[in-house]
Image (cartoon, rainbow, N blue to C red; front, side, top):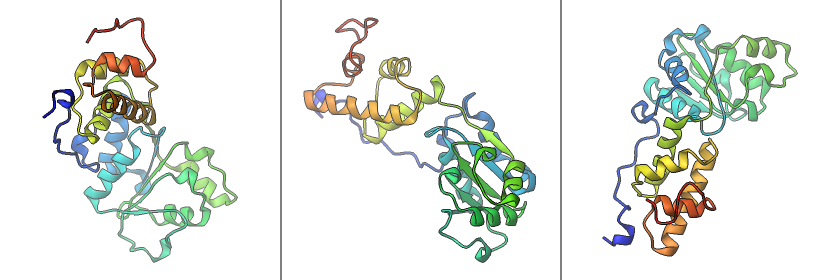
Length: 225
């Protein structure tokens, strides 16, 4: 193995639907607890609300695998044709207007056929022309996930590096956590830039390289690692 690419390893990729590789912290612990306690959801319904990359889809996928739920896209399925006992996941409900479908999905859900919804905004803020849907949206149990904190952001960065078969040094993760935007898209973008720079210059991935990619930082002198 080339010394210049010594951090590239044959790493086993985690299964995205596994609760075991979901990193819990203060920003998402309440959401994970609520999802795992699905048998207690009021009326068998729960909405996970949070920004992109906050972990909504991870939790929804893990729950779907655990309970055997089906994932539906609004407007692409007839809820009346579904088995009454089938658990359902609907993701990004606030970005796919389909009032009639969403109304029927909420209406059919109960403890025996639970419904998990994900969205970036609370259901009370969703526009609808159906008064009956409005009242049902307002009554849904909502749990919010916050933007990634230090613990989760470091784990997200490490996962994106591992997707490229790179095992980053802790010093690199610590450096990036303190300096990048707290979002999964920003983390993915910076990992891509660092990997491309390392490949182009045939360099190992270090804090010095991260500093250069981010445009310099007076807190880190050149050569420090």
